[in-house]
Image: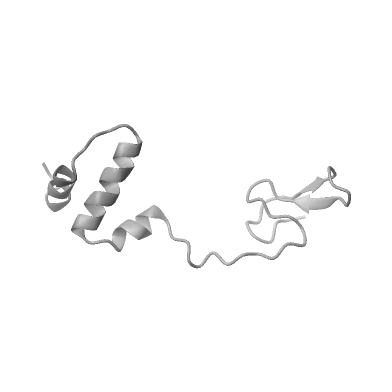
Length: 84
């Protein structure tokens, strides 16, 4: 059986009182409502809708979470002239 949410093959989950088909790709379980994902956007889409200062703050926060300490001013300079 194919998953109605993502289209992957579903597996029979027999660990329950009543066995249900479950998709291990997206987590859909047979009989559950499919939630709308219209309000979710990717990081790329979110970044495209930001102005320069918001984009530099967004990128700087993401780099800090990975262990890099890059000031927002350096990112703003790079966004203005990426050829350097």
